[in-house]
Image 1: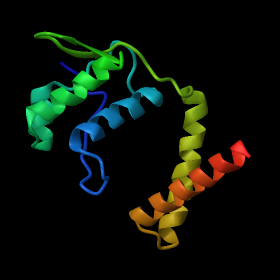
Image 2: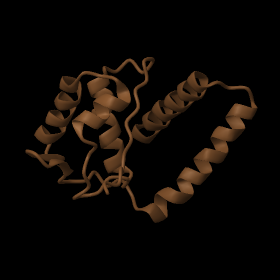
Image 3: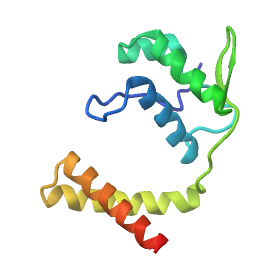
Image 4: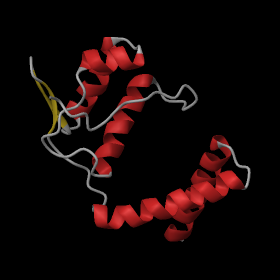
Amino acid sequence: MEVLVIEFHLDGRSGLSPYQQLVQQVRHALRLGVLREGDQLPKVKDVVASLAINPNTVLKAYRELEHDGLVSARPGVGTFVTATLGGGSFAVLGPLRHELRRWLSKARKAGLDEESIEALLMSTFRDSAREDIA
């Protein structure tokens, strides 16, 4: 029985093409340690069925990830993770994720919708990056 480690989703408001969203989701999963070396990405036919997208879109995303050296396709078997983008351990990420979830809950209770929360996060992130440079 195959265990799914990542389940793709598409957001029509993201401004990214579907293939770019798939690539980004895999990269994020690699960075957060959700996907690890040896894990199998969902089969193309399964992604096509769950997202109702063209198989070429999924293949394009998988090819880009392969070109970046992050995955390797094994004909007839599937596509497997060959490298990670480790950004931190679960011991570090777990408490940060918990804190962020608490903050998101506060933001929602304050009346912010998803777009407003995202705008606030991104602007704060950019401001913080500028301050770190200065």
